[in-house]
Image (cartoon, rainbow, N blue to C red; front, side, top):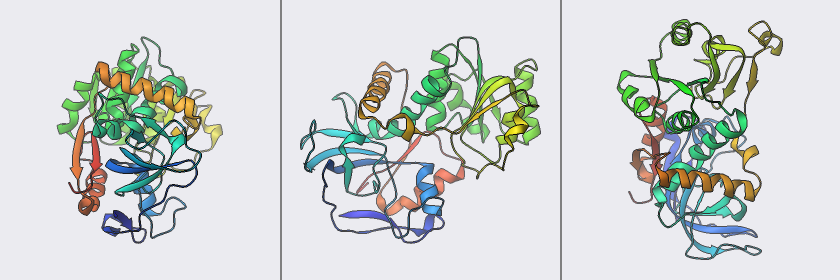
Length: 325
């Protein structure tokens, strides 16, 4: 089979398309022929060596496709089923061994591309707005990268709950996408102190109730300074690099702030919980509450370009890798 391999840790250029042995489904696994794999910052962290994966390896963990075989002890799935997942290693490949407990069946009216584009970001937006911080009507949220795939989902779900959303984007050209998702105010990010001032200006000095930050180092301090007393800072990623070390005691004089770094793994470990969250996400796609925006489709031979584009900060929506595209 054809797959994308990170020959070593480093920049996007370490990704190459190559021939690999076909995987075999182990007990509890599905063997799935990939239609589309999602490109995420998690994959970037793997490629750069921020995780425990040793090179060479096949990156990726999210995708959708059709089951071609099942391993022993698999129930509830059979060949021909269309499935999607967000936690299967080595998903940048024509054939993926997906743990059955990590897979969900894709409804007939949802395309593989939409399922692949919605799994990680849609499920993440689901738990962030229902389990991590359940925004109430009239509250205000700050959402960084509001034109990105996760950002747009967060904006839509928060607005649906009656919250007012201040979104940030990296360039003026992304403002329209954040506004289309429902953001009430959109800020083009600049210096950290200017970002804080602009957020406070839009909240009459009160600050926001919650911050969703997937950028990390470049926006961390500004977000903390933009929170109201007893506000919640939700760190969901580190696109600009890890945040600086923080003494928990420093949260007290800032207004008794809350800080959390949640992950999807801890909110979808149980197959029943995963299925329930996925059913909500697919339902929201069907109803138009959430919308998938495909920001780019790349063949395996252009995986390095996909990673470079993702890290450039110039893309909007979701990037997909598709065999033979």
